[in-house]
Image 1 (cartoon, rainbow, N blue to C red):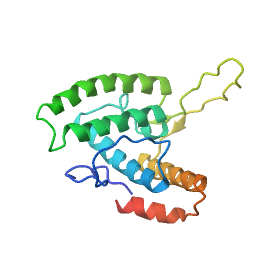
Image 2 (cartoon, rainbow, N blue to C red):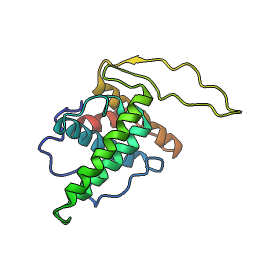
Image 3 (cartoon, rainbow, N blue to C red):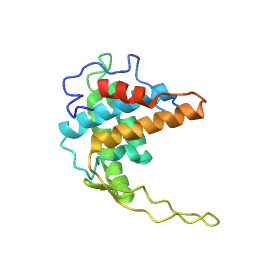
Image 4 (tube, one colour):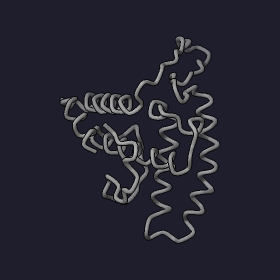
Amino acid sequence: MFDDQAFDGVTEPLIAEPPHPVNWNLLTAEQAETEWIELNRWVNWLRRTYGLPASIIPPFWHRHPELVWELSALHLHWLGAYDPEQHGSAPFGWHRDFADARNRLHDWVATSGTRLNRDRPTRQTAWPGESQAGAVEDVAIADRDADFVEFVVADIERRRAADGQSSDPQAGCRRMNDR
């Protein structure tokens, strides 16, 4: 299981290479597993460090691509701003951009309908000629960390299947629980 305090005191990222943009659409299963774990650790650190409410970073952020992309970009920006080779004023730029990102996150959370104790898929507007989306139901959040592990394992399995790789779903769970 993930430790809610996993990022606290951690100075070394799981990824041992310079920061790079993350295109979630193109990641392999192994890359995605690493990126999910690293992003989850950082998001937990971020929300605790800055006291962010669920209206900015909700527990089910991982189930909303608009939040994943924003948080992933913000994480990359933070890594760059706090790199030891960076200019000393870089963190000011990150904090300025963080203020803008909080506004976008708030807007997307409001649009998506995810909340502290429940979640639903982001509603999609059908354009003329498209099928109307079905009803969107709220789901109660019982155990956020268990849902995150289940979500990531399913994502990894989907990516492996798309690449024609066989997999052992239990191996992914064991690796994720070890971190």
